[in-house]
Length: 147
Image (cartoon, rainbow, N blue to C red):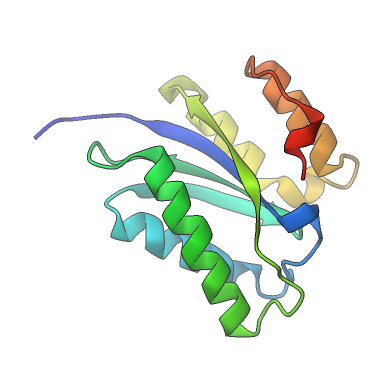
């Protein structure tokens, strides 16, 4: 069996970054996302977020692809969220997602970052956060991506 370490820090945002993920029920969304990651043979390392976006750290299975995993998570969790009644304002996920590869040495730093999303966002908007992260990761971010 092959041994692969394929850690990815992934961020998805709600449609138009509206605060439609009710914090009282956001853990239900986390569990749903975990179930999809697990069903595909990958491993959820950490998940956390606020009303308009979710971060997660995934150890991607050697037999899966990031694009297919994200399509599955976004499609199925969107359907579930609308049908569950827990998120009455939820309209779906934004078109984009952000994914950054993470080295083993950075794993604990990313875990702490994800754990502290609520505190972190008391002084920082989602847009400010993503602009900073993408610059740090060397990604050319265009403002039109925030739709």
